Image (cartoon, rainbow, N blue to C red; front, side, top):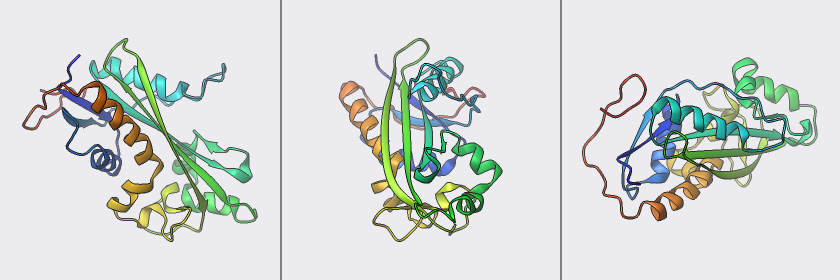
Length: 210
């Protein structure tokens, strides 16, 4: 199967910039994006660790009716036995980075692990491929201008939180970049015979190229 484009589902311009930056110019088709607001799944009772991102990818493919990638991010606080995990978006929206810092302030162990799961599918009823990246760090008092966990997560070996970093640095060490690099290797191998479409594309209401 040849692809003309691949739609990244995200409402974050920072996220699309990071993903495009890691994928680079070698990918043999155009990378576009859609701000499609997907349902937030809450986990699988059967214990499939990839359930959330797989279901988001299937829903996106049915809506877009074409090839898509989606991401699901988790942040695990060691002291909280895995929380907030996949509920990090809810933590961001309710208590923000300052609230997360206050929760951990009195814990001696402030270590955390950020996990990015990137899912890709060629379209409706096609297989979903999942690529995962991990990054260990420490939850610190929020810095920078952000409200979310990225303003209080300082990767191990670094002196800056994510929100203070230049994109070029973040693209070398973030959990998302590790997952996207695995996706990139997969795409280059699978679609090496693809011819890249020149020019730009716009999107209709469903994120389709027109």
